[in-house]
Image (cartoon, rainbow, N blue to C red; front, side, top):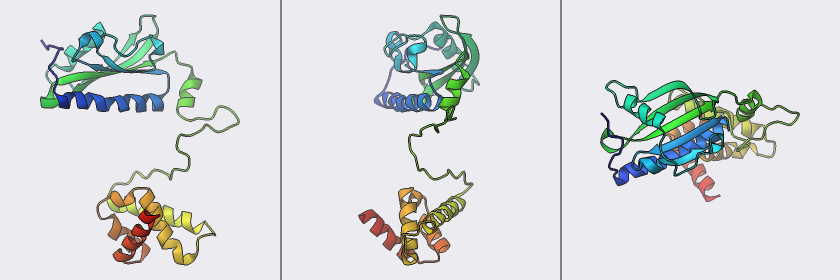
Length: 227
């Protein structure tokens, strides 16, 4: 039988602390139809260390672990367990849920926490669509980061850099205020702003695609960083 109360190391606490950003990010992405709770197994009486959209149940940080979460923990620690359980349930008010409980492993592979996600199946469809950014009125839905370039799901570094260079080249050529002699410099600046040069071999790849030397790319990079 798994003992849910475990002794934590500083590394364990750091792992759980990092999951708090995950809870916030998931809540922001999925919308308020999802209740997301991060449980720490260090103190079962106050296990809820991060709660998003707790308005569904009134649950807050510092709340104790639930009996259902404890029963899920037993399943999660069974031999050959995939580390998560998906199931249908109801909350204390009888609202139908689609839920998942995911184990969080700490130092030495011991389970130190649980990430519980409950989707309220009676959430209005309009709320779900709004969370996905689907405009329901005449005005387009706002975005948190307007002006982002399209996301490239490349299979390798060359493909990623090639697509990024092509997009930057199109953007620069469509701007009549940029002189032709400065286009490569502006392309490199755009790639730098997108973080492309953090990829291994991105500089020589960009140089090859732009038809310039590696040293010229570095020269443009220094100018971009100086700006």
